[in-house]
Image (cartoon, rainbow, N blue to C red; front, side):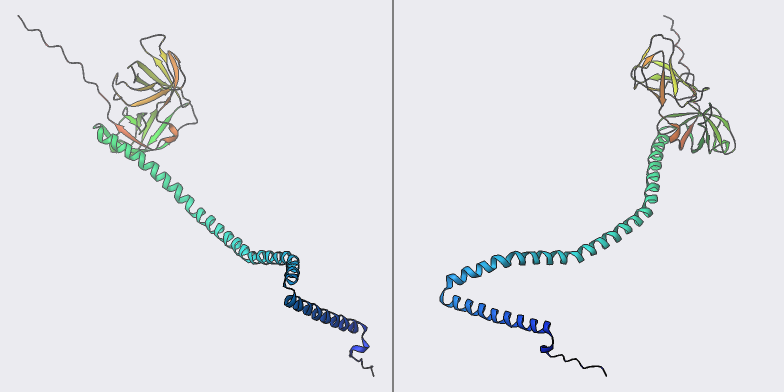
Length: 292
Protein backbone atom coordinates (compact mmCIF):
# COMPACT_ATOMS: atom_id res chain seq x y z
CA UNK A 1 0.00 0.00 0.00
CA UNK A 2 1.39 3.38 -1.02
CA UNK A 3 2.28 5.79 1.78
CA UNK A 4 -0.04 8.68 2.39
CA UNK A 5 1.62 12.05 1.90
CA UNK A 6 0.81 14.62 4.53
CA UNK A 7 0.02 17.94 2.86
CA UNK A 8 0.45 20.07 6.03
CA UNK A 9 2.88 22.98 5.83
CA UNK A 10 5.36 21.51 8.28
CA UNK A 11 6.32 18.77 5.87
CA UNK A 12 7.20 21.19 2.93
CA UNK A 13 10.16 23.54 3.19
CA UNK A 14 8.98 25.54 0.15
CA UNK A 15 5.60 26.12 1.75
CA UNK A 16 7.26 27.18 4.94
CA UNK A 17 9.33 29.78 3.08
CA UNK A 18 6.26 31.01 1.23
CA UNK A 19 4.26 31.42 4.42
CA UNK A 20 7.19 33.16 6.13
CA UNK A 21 7.60 35.63 3.28
CA UNK A 22 3.85 36.24 3.29
CA UNK A 23 3.93 37.01 7.03
CA UNK A 24 6.92 39.32 6.56
CA UNK A 25 5.22 41.21 3.75
CA UNK A 26 2.02 41.51 5.73
CA UNK A 27 3.86 42.82 8.78
CA UNK A 28 5.92 45.19 6.62
CA UNK A 29 2.80 46.46 4.92
CA UNK A 30 1.11 47.02 8.24
CA UNK A 31 4.17 48.85 9.59
CA UNK A 32 4.45 51.02 6.45
CA UNK A 33 0.74 51.75 6.59
CA UNK A 34 1.00 52.68 10.27
CA UNK A 35 3.98 54.94 9.61
CA UNK A 36 2.17 56.63 6.78
CA UNK A 37 -0.93 57.05 8.89
CA UNK A 38 1.07 58.62 11.74
CA UNK A 39 2.99 60.85 9.31
CA UNK A 40 -0.18 62.05 7.64
CA UNK A 41 -1.64 62.78 11.02
CA UNK A 42 1.24 64.48 12.81
CA UNK A 43 3.57 65.63 9.97
CA UNK A 44 1.59 66.44 6.79
CA UNK A 45 4.61 67.98 4.93
CA UNK A 46 6.63 64.80 5.45
CA UNK A 47 3.69 62.70 4.26
CA UNK A 48 3.29 64.92 1.16
CA UNK A 49 6.98 64.51 0.31
CA UNK A 50 6.76 60.75 0.74
CA UNK A 51 3.62 60.66 -1.38
CA UNK A 52 5.27 62.62 -4.18
CA UNK A 53 8.35 60.40 -4.05
CA UNK A 54 6.17 57.34 -4.45
CA UNK A 55 4.24 59.10 -7.26
CA UNK A 56 7.54 59.87 -9.00
CA UNK A 57 8.28 56.15 -9.08
CA UNK A 58 4.80 54.95 -9.99
CA UNK A 59 3.88 57.59 -12.61
CA UNK A 60 6.34 56.35 -15.32
CA UNK A 61 5.17 52.81 -14.73
CA UNK A 62 1.54 53.89 -14.91
CA UNK A 63 2.23 55.93 -18.06
CA UNK A 64 3.92 52.96 -19.71
CA UNK A 65 1.08 50.65 -18.78
CA UNK A 66 -1.47 53.22 -20.03
CA UNK A 67 0.34 53.63 -23.36
CA UNK A 68 0.56 49.87 -23.70
CA UNK A 69 -3.15 49.63 -23.01
CA UNK A 70 -3.95 52.27 -25.62
CA UNK A 71 -1.73 50.49 -28.13
CA UNK A 72 -3.41 47.20 -27.45
CA UNK A 73 -6.81 48.88 -27.79
CA UNK A 74 -5.85 50.21 -31.23
CA UNK A 75 -4.83 46.79 -32.50
CA UNK A 76 -8.40 45.50 -33.04
CA UNK A 77 -9.36 48.75 -34.81
CA UNK A 78 -6.28 48.49 -37.03
CA UNK A 79 -7.07 44.90 -37.88
CA UNK A 80 -10.68 45.77 -38.64
CA UNK A 81 -9.57 48.74 -40.74
CA UNK A 82 -7.12 46.61 -42.71
CA UNK A 83 -9.75 43.94 -43.32
CA UNK A 84 -12.30 46.60 -44.38
CA UNK A 85 -9.77 48.37 -46.63
CA UNK A 86 -8.79 45.05 -48.22
CA UNK A 87 -12.43 44.19 -48.87
CA UNK A 88 -13.18 47.69 -50.20
CA UNK A 89 -10.11 47.55 -52.45
CA UNK A 90 -11.20 44.19 -53.85
CA UNK A 91 -14.72 45.55 -54.43
CA UNK A 92 -13.32 48.62 -56.20
CA UNK A 93 -11.15 46.41 -58.43
CA UNK A 94 -14.19 44.35 -59.38
CA UNK A 95 -16.17 47.52 -60.06
CA UNK A 96 -13.30 48.94 -62.13
CA UNK A 97 -13.11 45.75 -64.18
CA UNK A 98 -16.82 46.13 -64.94
CA UNK A 99 -16.80 49.87 -65.65
CA UNK A 100 -13.59 50.05 -67.75
CA UNK A 101 -15.21 48.50 -70.87
CA UNK A 102 -18.26 50.71 -70.35
CA UNK A 103 -16.03 53.79 -70.12
CA UNK A 104 -14.18 52.82 -73.30
CA UNK A 105 -17.46 52.27 -75.08
CA UNK A 106 -18.77 55.63 -73.86
CA UNK A 107 -15.64 57.38 -75.15
CA UNK A 108 -16.04 55.74 -78.54
CA UNK A 109 -19.70 56.77 -78.67
CA UNK A 110 -18.84 60.35 -77.67
CA UNK A 111 -16.12 60.47 -80.34
CA UNK A 112 -18.51 59.17 -83.00
CA UNK A 113 -21.19 61.64 -81.90
CA UNK A 114 -18.81 64.58 -82.26
CA UNK A 115 -17.78 63.51 -85.74
CA UNK A 116 -21.38 62.81 -86.77
CA UNK A 117 -22.49 66.23 -85.54
CA UNK A 118 -19.72 67.83 -87.58
CA UNK A 119 -20.78 65.85 -90.64
CA UNK A 120 -24.39 66.81 -90.02
CA UNK A 121 -23.43 70.49 -90.02
CA UNK A 122 -21.47 70.01 -93.25
CA UNK A 123 -24.36 68.14 -94.82
CA UNK A 124 -26.82 70.90 -93.92
CA UNK A 125 -24.53 73.55 -95.40
CA UNK A 126 -23.65 71.63 -98.59
CA UNK A 127 -26.53 71.15 -100.98
CA UNK A 128 -24.42 68.84 -103.17
CA UNK A 129 -24.23 66.01 -100.62
CA UNK A 130 -25.26 62.63 -102.05
CA UNK A 131 -24.94 60.35 -99.03
CA UNK A 132 -23.26 59.98 -95.64
CA UNK A 133 -21.69 56.55 -95.22
CA UNK A 134 -19.07 54.66 -93.26
CA UNK A 135 -15.56 53.90 -94.47
CA UNK A 136 -15.28 50.28 -93.45
CA UNK A 137 -11.65 49.62 -94.40
CA UNK A 138 -8.52 51.18 -95.84
CA UNK A 139 -5.28 49.84 -97.30
CA UNK A 140 -2.11 50.95 -95.57
CA UNK A 141 0.37 48.13 -96.20
CA UNK A 142 0.96 48.46 -99.94
CA UNK A 143 2.10 51.33 -102.13
CA UNK A 144 -1.51 52.14 -103.04
CA UNK A 145 -3.94 53.91 -100.75
CA UNK A 146 -7.64 53.00 -101.07
CA UNK A 147 -10.64 52.88 -98.75
CA UNK A 148 -13.94 51.02 -99.02
CA UNK A 149 -17.23 52.87 -98.55
CA UNK A 150 -20.41 51.02 -97.55
CA UNK A 151 -22.56 52.90 -100.08
CA UNK A 152 -22.78 52.40 -103.84
CA UNK A 153 -24.91 52.95 -106.90
CA UNK A 154 -28.11 52.22 -104.99
CA UNK A 155 -27.28 55.28 -102.87
CA UNK A 156 -26.44 57.48 -105.84
CA UNK A 157 -22.65 57.15 -105.56
CA UNK A 158 -20.82 57.43 -108.90
CA UNK A 159 -17.13 57.33 -109.91
CA UNK A 160 -15.36 60.68 -109.67
CA UNK A 161 -17.41 61.98 -106.72
CA UNK A 162 -15.33 63.65 -103.98
CA UNK A 163 -15.31 62.17 -100.48
CA UNK A 164 -14.65 64.23 -97.37
CA UNK A 165 -14.69 63.76 -93.62
CA UNK A 166 -15.16 66.10 -90.64
CA UNK A 167 -11.50 67.21 -90.81
CA UNK A 168 -11.14 67.65 -94.54
CA UNK A 169 -10.86 66.01 -97.95
CA UNK A 170 -10.36 62.23 -98.03
CA UNK A 171 -10.23 61.48 -101.76
CA UNK A 172 -12.54 60.56 -104.63
CA UNK A 173 -14.60 57.57 -105.72
CA UNK A 174 -12.96 55.43 -108.42
CA UNK A 175 -15.20 52.33 -108.57
CA UNK A 176 -18.77 51.63 -107.49
CA UNK A 177 -20.89 48.58 -106.84
CA UNK A 178 -24.50 48.21 -105.78
CA UNK A 179 -23.80 48.90 -102.11
CA UNK A 180 -20.05 49.61 -101.98
CA UNK A 181 -17.57 52.04 -103.49
CA UNK A 182 -13.79 52.24 -103.71
CA UNK A 183 -12.20 55.54 -102.70
CA UNK A 184 -8.79 56.73 -103.90
CA UNK A 185 -7.15 58.44 -100.91
CA UNK A 186 -5.18 61.69 -101.13
CA UNK A 187 -1.95 59.91 -100.19
CA UNK A 188 -2.13 57.53 -103.19
CA UNK A 189 0.50 58.23 -105.88
CA UNK A 190 -2.27 58.65 -108.50
CA UNK A 191 -4.04 61.35 -106.51
CA UNK A 192 -3.56 64.98 -107.61
CA UNK A 193 -5.62 67.83 -106.13
CA UNK A 194 -5.39 71.54 -107.08
CA UNK A 195 -5.16 73.67 -103.94
CA UNK A 196 -4.48 77.20 -102.80
CA UNK A 197 -2.82 78.67 -99.72
CA UNK A 198 -5.31 80.21 -97.33
CA UNK A 199 -3.24 83.27 -96.39
CA UNK A 200 -2.52 84.57 -99.88
CA UNK A 201 -4.28 82.31 -102.41
CA UNK A 202 -1.02 80.88 -103.79
CA UNK A 203 -1.93 78.03 -106.21
CA UNK A 204 -0.30 74.64 -105.71
CA UNK A 205 -0.85 70.93 -106.27
CA UNK A 206 -1.11 68.18 -103.66
CA UNK A 207 0.18 64.84 -104.94
CA UNK A 208 0.20 61.56 -103.02
CA UNK A 209 3.46 59.90 -101.99
CA UNK A 210 2.13 56.42 -101.13
CA UNK A 211 3.48 56.57 -97.57
CA UNK A 212 0.64 58.42 -95.84
CA UNK A 213 2.01 61.90 -96.61
CA UNK A 214 1.66 64.14 -99.67
CA UNK A 215 3.92 66.38 -101.74
CA UNK A 216 2.99 70.03 -102.06
CA UNK A 217 4.22 71.55 -105.33
CA UNK A 218 4.06 75.10 -106.56
CA UNK A 219 2.61 75.83 -110.01
CA UNK A 220 3.37 78.64 -112.48
CA UNK A 221 6.14 79.96 -110.22
CA UNK A 222 9.66 79.16 -109.07
CA UNK A 223 11.47 79.74 -105.79
CA UNK A 224 8.16 79.75 -103.94
CA UNK A 225 8.72 79.58 -100.21
CA UNK A 226 6.54 77.31 -98.06
CA UNK A 227 6.51 77.79 -94.29
CA UNK A 228 5.71 75.14 -91.67
CA UNK A 229 2.03 75.28 -90.78
CA UNK A 230 0.85 76.75 -94.10
CA UNK A 231 -2.74 75.64 -94.75
CA UNK A 232 -4.02 74.61 -98.15
CA UNK A 233 -7.62 74.09 -99.29
CA UNK A 234 -9.13 72.97 -102.56
CA UNK A 235 -9.12 75.69 -105.20
CA UNK A 236 -11.89 74.34 -107.41
CA UNK A 237 -9.66 74.61 -110.47
CA UNK A 238 -10.61 72.06 -113.12
CA UNK A 239 -13.78 71.04 -111.32
CA UNK A 240 -14.35 67.79 -109.35
CA UNK A 241 -13.54 69.22 -105.88
CA UNK A 242 -15.52 72.18 -104.61
CA UNK A 243 -13.33 75.08 -103.41
CA UNK A 244 -12.57 75.67 -99.75
CA UNK A 245 -12.27 72.08 -98.46
CA UNK A 246 -9.27 71.64 -96.08
CA UNK A 247 -6.64 69.41 -97.69
CA UNK A 248 -3.16 69.60 -96.13
CA UNK A 249 -0.80 71.40 -93.79
CA UNK A 250 2.93 71.92 -94.48
CA UNK A 251 5.15 69.90 -92.15
CA UNK A 252 8.61 71.21 -92.98
CA UNK A 253 9.38 74.46 -94.78
CA UNK A 254 11.13 74.63 -98.11
CA UNK A 255 10.95 75.88 -101.68
CA UNK A 256 8.94 74.66 -104.68
CA UNK A 257 8.17 71.16 -103.29
CA UNK A 258 7.68 70.26 -99.62
CA UNK A 259 6.12 67.44 -97.60
CA UNK A 260 2.68 68.04 -96.12
CA UNK A 261 0.25 66.11 -93.95
CA UNK A 262 -3.41 65.73 -94.87
CA UNK A 263 -6.03 66.93 -92.41
CA UNK A 264 -7.99 63.67 -92.79
CA UNK A 265 -5.72 61.00 -91.33
CA UNK A 266 -6.24 57.38 -92.45
CA UNK A 267 -6.30 56.07 -88.87
CA UNK A 268 -9.33 58.29 -88.08
CA UNK A 269 -11.47 57.33 -91.06
CA UNK A 270 -14.97 56.26 -90.04
CA UNK A 271 -17.80 58.36 -91.45
CA UNK A 272 -17.59 60.33 -94.67
CA UNK A 273 -19.71 62.47 -97.00
CA UNK A 274 -19.95 61.81 -100.72
CA UNK A 275 -20.76 64.92 -102.75
CA UNK A 276 -21.63 65.58 -106.35
CA UNK A 277 -18.85 66.49 -108.72
CA UNK A 278 -18.16 70.19 -108.64
CA UNK A 279 -18.73 71.89 -111.98
CA UNK A 280 -17.47 75.48 -112.08
CA UNK A 281 -19.67 77.97 -113.82
CA UNK A 282 -18.29 79.26 -117.11
CA UNK A 283 -17.17 82.86 -117.06
CA UNK A 284 -19.85 85.32 -117.98
CA UNK A 285 -19.73 86.49 -121.57
CA UNK A 286 -18.85 90.16 -121.97
CA UNK A 287 -21.78 92.42 -122.69
CA UNK A 288 -22.00 93.47 -126.34
CA UNK A 289 -20.92 96.98 -127.07
CA UNK A 290 -23.71 99.34 -127.91
CA UNK A 291 -23.47 101.47 -130.99
CA UNK A 292 -23.10 105.16 -130.34
